[in-house]
Image (spheres, rainbow, N blue to C red):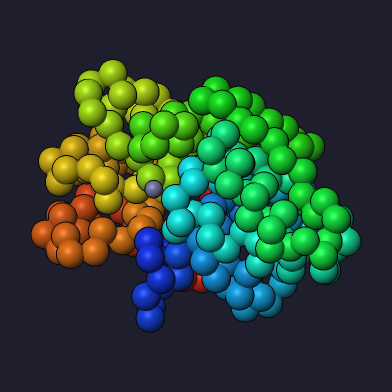
Length: 235
Ligand SMILES: [Zn+2]
């Protein structure tokens, strides 16, 4: 599995695009998770554009969804195939409206598939599962399993109590690598979570801006990575 970080910021900055992650599987299929503003242009800068099977959205906030119409239009223009948008209810509803309004000259460029907090989805020998992330009313994270490798991407996550924390830990457990967003967590909770998973690669996206002390401590924990746009990881 190859993971390419198309965007590693929250809002766009000179150095970082909004969030988006490309996952390529050994069967030549690929998916994109989240689609911040400018994802289309980030994708164009790769030397090779893989066959994108679906776009998974974690939730409806601007930094995860604003690039969707441009990306859909671009992918449709090169493949002439409808792409699947897989998302929880609110993100799916907004995606439909955005794509319909802004890509009106292409009839039905996308199929819309709603996930709930425990959906699973399969294409070929790749399996995707959802889990709740307690950030918005229906936000989810995704785990992808392929050939014995598990990669988890949380999107924005939050937990208010021990049960929710336990739920997040269970979802990440068994992963070889995981994108963990600590931006909405307190420093103490962030460091405890990273420490709990000290034996796996932990990728911090987006970078917690203005929390230099937290970053310093997080980077001391084995396996913590803060990638730049276009960095990639083979797992
Ligand atoms: Zn959010």
